[in-house]
Length: 256
Image 1 (cartoon, helix red, strand yellow):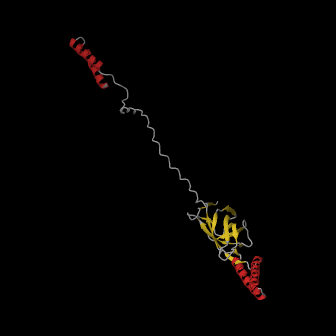
Image 2 (spheres, rainbow, N blue to C red):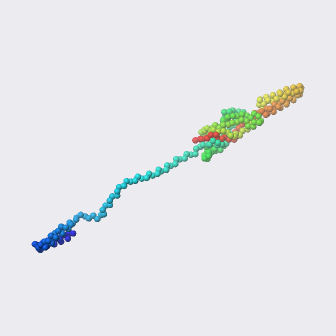
Image 3 (cartoon, rainbow, N blue to C red):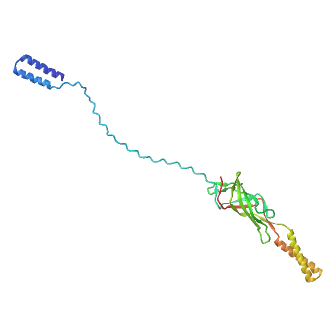
């Protein structure tokens, strides 16, 4: 661009010098001068070949993040199976002490030892073998005649000792191995025999009015009295050590 402008200037100067006053040459010079004026000035600004900056993206309002589902809470630890026995649970024990209707009275106690582990429905042992159960005598009486083959004995569970601790026990004794033991001839039994003999002797005198019938009557009366005494002789209820006792719970039993 610079070289072209310089040539135009030189050409205009040469024409002016050669023609001076020639009208045609002057017109040509004026035309060249106008052309020079129309030539754009050289730009010194550095060309920027970089692409135009892309328009900034329009600002957008961020969407709120969807709430994350709450993390599942860890399950609470399951409690250990409670040491409980349901009502109706039965177990066997063996007598440690002995009791007799001749020597023991209502309100006294005896102890028995649990024969084997007593477990609940979950299989957990609640009352281990060897635990000691205390029983209270609620009723006791001898057999008073031959037709009574059992006498009277009622035992009630009170407590059980487990590992040095005592726990209340509510239940009943459904079975107890016991025997009847005769007391032998007692003063009461002798009185019955004597009364029979006297009655027989009196009857012999009334009937025979002689000594022999009296003696015979006394013998017969004594025999009758002995029979009465035998039929009415007391036989004591006895529970010996080692006897089997069955206990049934009537309420739920729980221990720590």
